[in-house]
Amino acid sequence: MKNGTKGAITLRQLDAFKRIGGKWLIVQQHISFPMDPKTGMGLLDSPMPVRGPLKLNPESFASAPVPVEQAKKEIRSWLDVGVLSRNLDELMSYYGPTDDVIVYDMLYPPGEFRGMKEIRAGFAPVMDFTDPQVKMLDFTVDSDGVFAVQIDTQDITVTKRDGTKSNFYLRQSDCMRR
Image (cartoon, one colour):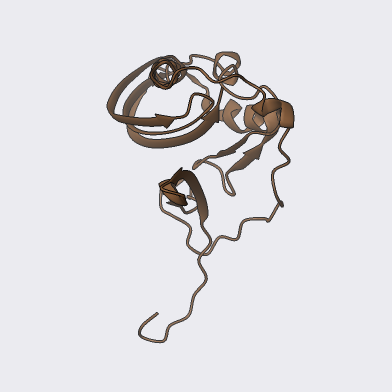
């Protein structure tokens, strides 16, 4: 720090690049800290295990492109339906299909789920609600017809199985492929 104090910060960073004018430029960047699920506060000095690079499955990138406007509509539809998942199986249909998928989640430090098995296990404890209500406050997407990045803000209200209601806001950013 400027005052001489030293400290450690652990963070997660996701960057989406696009080639524009012959240069790779960041078109979306998301930086976050692990979070204490009890307090909702960022854990600035919470080390995260280093797991190495994600192993990508070449077949995951074999899809033919669709027109850009179609891709943007499909992604918006995916979000409109996906955020309303009422159970774990429905939610899991929006991930994969292979294990070269990663989810950074804020609820459970370190919050990195790799592959379908870890994603399922990571979300299982929080899928204890019925009747999710979601208002999409903003939404932006960019796509080339195969790969896309999107960012949105959601106002979410859920009714838990015990009858209590919870309301929270969520900023979400995703990189996805068709």
